[in-house]
Structures are given as structure tokens and as C-alpha cells.
Image (cartoon, one colour):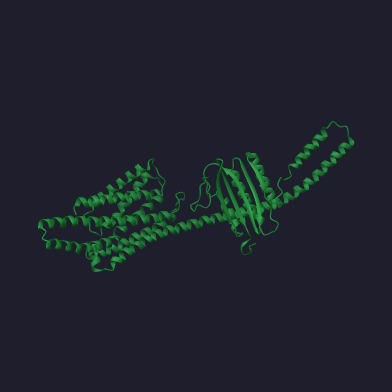
Length: 485
């Protein structure tokens, strides 16, 4: 196989690796370019030229010395990242390090495949030559065919091995991308250490094993396979396990991030519930005082009206008008919704007032269940979050209703909305579009947690009728799990 063909093949391989590195980096960093296609082409070409040029410069190095090409490759990727993407150093370091680790380890993990392919091709090639000689093919023709077929076979074997290497690299990179937290998550110093240590350990172990194997008698890797056939399986297996460790560390990190996020949300929910407990107690006292005050005021106004009519039957009507205004003011203290519980009365009443201020039609048909199997604090969290979210999104109308089916209690909140919903990665819950995601976007998750306390769940339906989008949230409650208090 000619040097030109080998160089051309190597350049194409580096070009493909450059395209993979661009795609991989784009999963970690926000773009700093306008045209993605043009940027990917420039990246791949620059990467291929630099890698191919450096490989030519180090062509005379000993086999085990070439392992340390990882340093300039890392520097090249880090430079390209800074030129094409945002300047997020922790993410850039991990993206570059994990790519270099995968590329360098897989570069030799497929060498047993090449050894097996060449081992199979040798006897086949010899048999073909002997057969041609037996058939009386001229020597010149045999030599020409020998050269042509051998070059073609070598080219195909190398190209096939490189294709396997690139395919495994793509699977490895996709595995990391699938587990890594989204771009919005900011890596901190200890996060970076947690992710980089497996990369460093994998690379150092791989380089150490191969350096020891090659430096034993300064021989080629293929000879080592002949002298110790078990290495045909052990070395590739060790390489793949090392890469698996890197992917597993990304998966473990994702789990830790999710657990931390869940813990933070749980703490916020507990704080929210504690606040509701305090507010409920205050509201119950205020509600009781208001009921007594309304009753007393109505009696006082009625007494004043009777007294005024008795002492001034032919008055000018000013006193009657004043008392009528007082009656209207007292009437405003009455809640339009009688839900069967003072706390839910207050929540629905406040939502109705907020809807009136916003100019949104409000309809309520909520009734507290007759039995006592539900905690007012939990139902308050569900009701308050559902109405708050609905009022924020609604532009024309919002409604809340409840109904019972046997032992099941359902709460439905519906509202119209404009724009598009953003869903979480699991595609189960809409997420907030606000910048401060740590303090917002908790409503639906709080509703789900409360529902699950009662062996229940939530369901979200989005529909569009006559050009208007409608959001319907259904919460189902049954009874508390394990007799919780």
C-alpha cells in the first residue's frame, strides 16, 4: 500500500474524528457562531490538518512514545472550543479530556481486529498466488496481481478497523452526552474533579499497560499478540472497560445532580408547607372574626336604619343613602364561593379577585369533600399552585372545579394560554421559562408530590380548539399512604 494512499486514508479518518469532536462539543457548550454547517466544516478541516501534520512530525517516534500525542490533541481541542463556542472552562476541559481519552484508547483497542484480519488474509493471499502459478499465469502478471490485491486488501482492512474505531467512539460519546446534565447546569470545581478523575485514571492505566507491553523488547504490538494470544482479548476488553468507567462516572454524576435537585425541591416544598401551616392558622382566625363582624355589622346597620326611620320619617334621604353604602361595603366581605372549608374559600376568593384585576373570566365549582381523609394543608398547596400557575398563563379564562367518584377526589384546573410549553427531559411536566429556575417552576412538582401522598397522580392535557390553546390539569387523590398523619 503506497504512502499516498495511507496518508489520504489517515486524513479522512482525522476529518471524521474532527466532525465527531465538533458534534460532541456542541452538546456541552453554547455556540458562538451563526452558521453551524460552515463552522463544523472549518472545525473538521482545522482539526484534521493539525492532527495529520503532527502525526507526520512524530512518524519517527517509537510506538510507545506516540501514546503521548494526547497532550497536543487536548490543546488543539481546547483551542478550537474557545474559537467556536462559549468560554465555559469547566465544560471545555471535560469535553476535550473525555474525547481525547476515547480516541486514544480506541485507537489501539481495535488493533486485535486488524491482527486477526491480516492473519486471515495472509494464507488466503498465499493460496491465491500458488493457484495462479499452477494455472500457468505469467510471472509478471502474477506479481502485478499480487501487488494490486495486497494493496487493496491492506487498504480495506485498515479502513475497516478505522471505521470500527470511529463507530465505537461515536457510541462512547453518545453515552456520555445521554447522561450529562444539560447546558444550563453550571459545573463547579468539585464537579469537574469528579468527572476528570475517571478520565485521567483511564488514560494513565491504558498508557501504562501499553507502554510496558511495547517497551519490554521494543517490539511491535502485533508481535506481542503472537507471543501472548490472551492479549488479543484482554487488552481490548480492558480498554472498553476503562471507557465504560468514564461513561458510568457521567451517569453517576447525573444521578447525583438529580438527587441534589430533588433534595433542594423537597426542602423548598417543606418550607412552603410550613408557611402554609402558619397562614392557614391565621386565615382560620381571620375568617372566624370576619363572620362575626359581618353578622354584627348587618345587625347594627339594620338597627340604625330602623332608628333613623323612626326619628326622622320625612328625612332628606342622605342617611338612608349612607346606610345603603355601608350595606354594600359589608356585602363585599362576603365570599362569592362557599366551598365548604374556610381555607379553600379564601384561596378561591383571592384567585377570583386576581382574575378580575387581570381581566380574566373566572369560574369556580370547587367543593370540599364531606369526609376528613384529606389534609387541608395538602389540598391548599394543590389548589393554590394550580390557580397561581393558571392565572400567570391565562389571557381570557380560568376555571377550577372538583368532583368525587366513589372514594376518589378529583381537582381540575383549566386555562387558556399562548405561546409554546417547554417540557422537562422526561416529557412529563412543563418547566418554567423564567431565568431563576431554582425559585420557579416548582408548582406542578409540588402538586404531584401532594397527590402522591394520597396514592394519586396528576394528568396534563393540552388541546387546541378554534385557534385557542387550552391547558387542563387533573389531580386525583385517594387516601393517605400507610396511614400518614
